[in-house]
Length: 104
Image 1 (tube, rainbow, N blue to C red):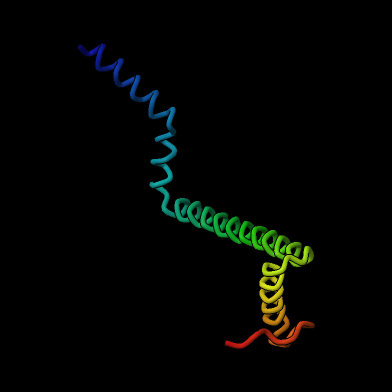
Image 2: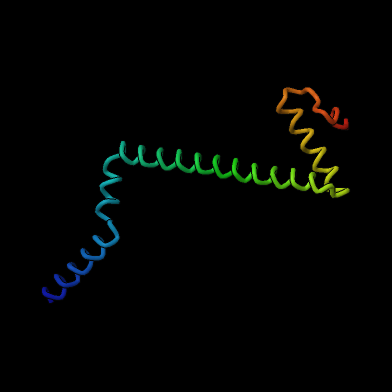
């Protein structure tokens, strides 16, 4: 019976080591390290989201500019209005070469 319990305990210890439960528990024993790890993880997530959104937005704007260059009737005018609005906002409110965006 004792041999069975010791065997089961060894097996359980091996499984805990395999899933790094000791390292996980050590992380909770040191609150400063836990805070630092979570802080760095949050910064990495935020930076990744910002870079990803910037790249995605740039690709969408590039695709919209290409649609304007193709002179598609309805899509071209819609995209031209959108780009004019974006340019107006980026330039600090001065209308671009196409004039002021249409009012409400």
